[in-house]
Length: 589
Ligand code: ADP
Image 1 (tube, rainbow, N blue to C red):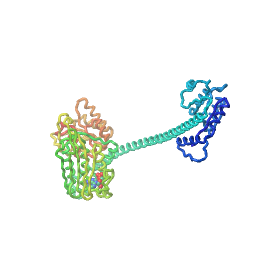
Image 2: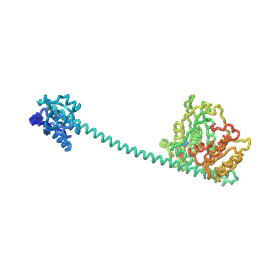
Image 3: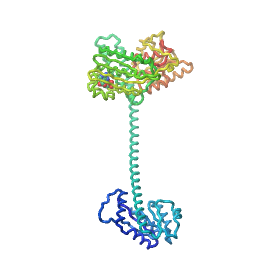
Image 4: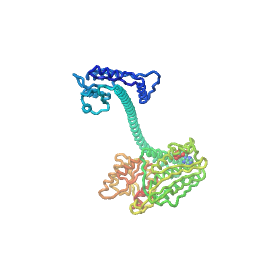
């Protein structure tokens, strides 16, 4: 780096110029070498050591008046070779004096080092400082000058000036780098924001698409499955029965895939609601085993369960999701096991007054999973090998849903498996302890039976515009002994209620003329006058959480998604009518 050794002498007396210049230009090799050594240490530059004396060259310029000095300083700065040091006389008649000149210089070039040269008769130093302000760039020298003091002063101030310039450059460079990085960061933040907004828009579009698709698929599925179920109840020959059973099987697996995709998207979009209601884990396990036994029986394998005796009878949690987890693990176990058995185990890991940590395990003696495939088995769309789909079907989403659901409930999942020997899938959940006040405040628990067993005839209004769905729902309900009236629009439903006495309404949401939400709200308004409350179960092919919430907001008491599951429908109706009419509370006990 080039050092600056440019000095301006300002004095009206030519003799002073000569004096200072001769002192500063007198060459004393040893002190110059010292000077270079100091420079080297300070600026860390290689200085080749030679035997030749090294010259420190000051470039010395001369001004005789304050105004002239200012002009020269301005020009030097414009030329990019500024003065580092100015020796300034105080008295320079007839123009501005040295103090005024320094003031002006510092206005524009505050970095210049100044040595004020005074004689005894001039201003006192205190007066000068008062005038110029305290500054570390100001020194005083009394005339006549001492040569060594003058030389040392010039050397020190030059070095100080160069150091200041260097640190100024570093600071500027640093500021520039920081500014550049800040700009880059701001651009990144902007880009990230745009990406986030795009992703959010895409997610919203995806959710809307899935909700629509699920509705579009579920409505005809409702028809196919319901009609087929009725077909199976008629007199069929062997071949017809087999074909009809095949339809049922395919429709079942199609519905499972649709449900899986919908569940997965709902969890991804953060729209999966987790409940905390009282339920009986023992009863729930019995139901799961009963459901699975239907499949194990047909495959000729055994199903067993072992349940820790210390599990509380009632716990708080989300029984629907818990059942889904066990059925997902369980149906996989059945699917991948040809001989031997499937077992469900539940152990208490930790228990206190307020909560209970349980480990649920579903083990099988099936095909098992190789070590390599085991690692990502809970990832979406992962199947142990490419032949799995061909041989066993499935979407590869079941385990991913299990993992996400368990994590949503604050738990964890895992698996141990050995190829050819079997698998052991588990999840650990902490469930809340049940205190009776959480149910009706009176500690009573009701147990829902499986058959309605009506003591009198109940009349149900079905509001549904789709012919196929009307037939399916009507058949199911008539078989249970209910009397059914069918209307096709929300408006007709409201009119029917004004004219007749009903025990319950099954209200489709999407209907022409007046939809189910509006009809439900109208019915609730009408009821305000007489204080009655007619149970309304919303019925829709859309399984999104918003529909559920909107139905409840409109005044519905429960919500069922289509295709209608016979057991689910009966169970929902039973909450409100039948022998258990008094305990019309939706608890999974
Ligand atoms: P799928 O719908 O394909 O069953 P899952 O996510 O439920 O999707 O399972 C992913 C894969 O994990 C399966 O395709 C299978 O390869 C493997 N798998 C899951 N459970 C078992 C099990 N009990 N025994 C052997 N393999 C299993």
